[in-house]
Image (cartoon, rainbow, N blue to C red; front, top):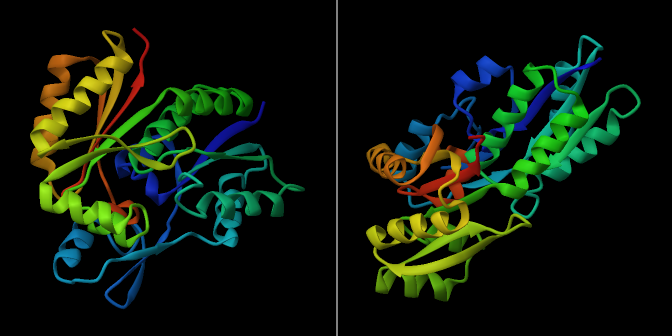
Length: 285
């Protein structure tokens, strides 16, 4: 039986310790800031990114890896000739990264068995799926079993996030200019989420971050009730806020495992500093 190797892109924001522990391969996306281009997580880390972001008025941009980047990653992952590849990526509604991976899959289909999956997610919402699939692969699950697990997690996962400013989403074309202006003037905090197609939408709107945090907990309680959950708390340059959220969640929910992750340059370019996000999926009791 073939082994399974997991590939993802850098927008999954998987902490290095988990990547190394589970043998996950990461293809970096490109980040363009201050007249320079960087490889996300390679020559631009999260701390450097947010420091530079504060020093410029420029809104950074990103571009997906090329199909050749993925071809090289797939070949490296399966170089022993006895490994299948599952490649899980940023929502196709937000980026062309998934399409690049699909094209790469077609370029190696005569030599490798590769399955490419659209996570319909972003940041460590992708990472949670990748980590669970990589754990399953380590346990000896087949490619088909890993694909089924990934799809099950995609369907059951929920992500909510708050941005400190709507400017980055507006300039990146994710929301309209009028919404950004009104939100800023009235201190209205849209509670943002991703729909089943991986598109950003406002799940609710409240005034002020504290009320928004409370409302997110209500929405998650409606969804998951008293059942056991796995939780990720995602921050940008504001880890102290993440600590507070994590403590609250453990008091309210039956949390079986908690992950902490930073929102790196790839996604941070589009949401900006001060962003907070929560990701939930069901856990076994």
